[in-house]
Image: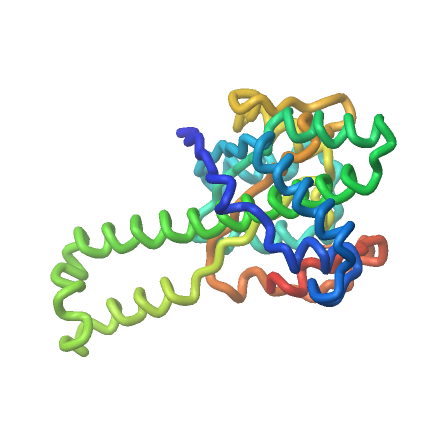
Length: 261
Ligand code: SF4
């Protein structure tokens, strides 16, 4: 079943030093006053014009396989191919900051206010990434609660919560707890790491992000632009580890897999 999730602006607003780091400053100290003022102005526009919302739906591995293999355009090396079969839980998602902030960015560029437009664009992109991190945390909490509830109701682990520290004979309970502590949810998106952008077609057919006003154009790009879609894969930390030496990695500028693994 689809869930609609509203984000608070302050939950996803990027930190000031991250915004400046993205723009080549190593520290927020000694930044000219003019630039500081542009940042404050951009932040106010961002706060007043963003409406961050997401849609989320858990999905079985078989259903995800149909979406992932999509139009048959993925790279054979795509790491998700190896990751999703080992997952504990899989969910599709899409998030957006809404139309207004995108229109503001476009308007600033149209008026040749490139500096303000650029900082606003940067804040919005980082906020969209933060919304995805927020969803990763939401998913792991949701998964932990449901596993813990299942453990409590299972005859094999009845009384688990009360006895886990004292009853060493229930080794399974300790193993389950260790498993929980070792879980990690990471998001993967069509258009990255060998998952072809055309994967958006089947993802949209299943998830219906149009319910939160995200649409797809013929090139599989989302409108509004500050939107992210993909899959949240929850499993043991080690399932997300891979060597980033795939044939498509040479085109990758961010190498973002390294900080996530
Ligand atoms: S280097 Fe880039 S393309 Fe390669 S796996 Fe990492 S994030 Fe994906």
